[in-house]
Length: 175
Figure 1 (tube, one colour):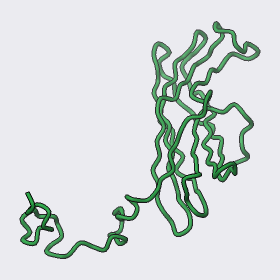
Figure 2: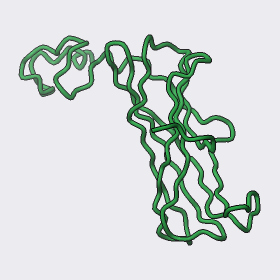
Figure 3: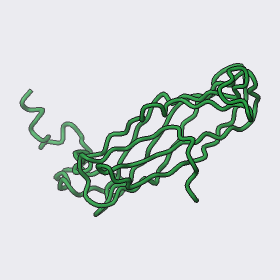
Figure 4: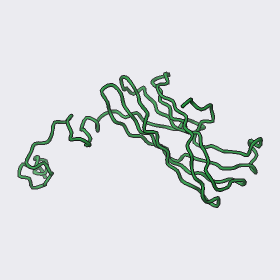
């Protein structure tokens, strides 16, 4: 098995290098991921307590279970990072489902999804999105995937950075 770690000097493994040496660790052909990016820190993402579920009610019927238009739940969050000279650009993804309530009907609903980034206690990014989901069938759940590809974290990247995604009924940010 030691031969498998030899770097394939004879080309037997056909690594596609055409007899060339591997590029240096921080260089990559256009569109390829650099080795340094694979080892770089990408801040984790989490849901804050109380932001994984959202209920929409008919007007003036808050908290009446018979007047629920829909219930939405986030089932998963993830992220990916790309690295610039002095910042990270993240794509944040949120997956979940919408279940129509007793007064739900087919159509387009709008959910308030916030993505926020904190460095310690400092907010470095916060955006509240009006994400629309088309509900075609009121007898079952509709799955959705939301993406925010424009999360930019400036300055030094360290382990104090925290990323959150979830429902937020607060005021919408100005576009």
